[in-house]
Length: 444
Image 1 (cartoon, helix red, strand yellow):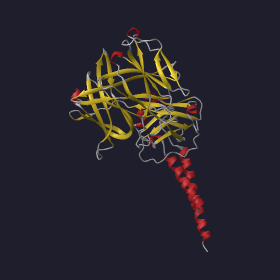
Image 2 (image 1 turned 90 degrees about the vertical axis):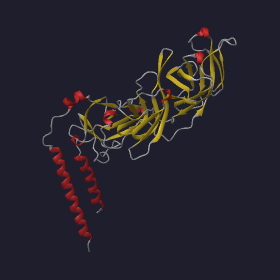
Image 3 (image 1 turned 180 degrees about the vertical axis):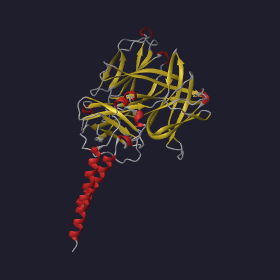
Image 4 (image 1 turned 60 degrees about the vertical axis):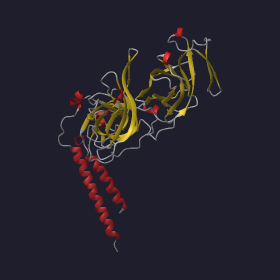
């Protein structure tokens, strides 16, 4: 009897998968394969994610030329958030130079302990008292063995305004790798201090960081420096950005946006259209109108001209909040963001699919069906570390203008599907007969 029940369950599962075909899904996109199989990896474009009818993307399928779904799995390109990690304090050492040196990087003599920690830093050549200029700061992160994701700095109170600097990383104090630009700000608006002290880092390991100010004459004196890290085994955070989304004005200096579907948002970008804009902003989020608004981020947003250069801070960092509605409330004491709602873009974790191509192509990615359950029966996915992952073949969605020519012609009678139906029906009848025979034989 148990055998009959198990067989019926397997037949039911096979029947569900056999019934699915590309036409049952809202979106069908042909794929082109490159490299060696049978496993291929596919970076799922943001536009295709928006076609999903299930937030966990369980309605994604990959079909072969005969309409048979292929085994696949999702890869996690970013570790889930376990909550905010505790900032770790790091020591900072001033880098002095002279006016004659201009923008030259300071040359230093360093004294380090056996484990690489910096004990002291001195200029390579003597500088007369009163002639030193604070060119930048050297931060010792040698005790931190995890990827560096964010830097938080604080500086002396007498320095207000915007501070712009370059960020470099090194493991030996000799060879330096650029890590981008940093901007921080401190302003007083109507006796209230507004600050922007966080700087994003690329999520890589480094023993030392070097900050070089663009305007050394106005460089602040650091009071403290902290870093936030990612897990040592986590993969680099890979984000994909949405197209710009239009918003509406709820009331003066209050804007809202409706996302196409619930998304796990990691970052938000506000298109600051007008020059000389400055606005402290608080971002709220929720899934639908039945929920209360929750504060999910805040930042000082601006687009200003300083020393003939334009400086822009237009992004807010989130912690993977799952939202579909966003609202931004800005303080207009700095000028606000204008009478119209700015365009908004959101960044979500990139989705990568690895699938096994059992048969010959062409293959089609289908997505968008609220009624399908689970995923096709699949073989066990081989364990893939980041090094093995890059060796897999790749799949690319065909552009929309090429999709029409790549799609197969309209189907006639699907004899293979009819044959499969016949096998399933006969199997079910056979199992039913076995079950009835077993019941009869068990009676006295």
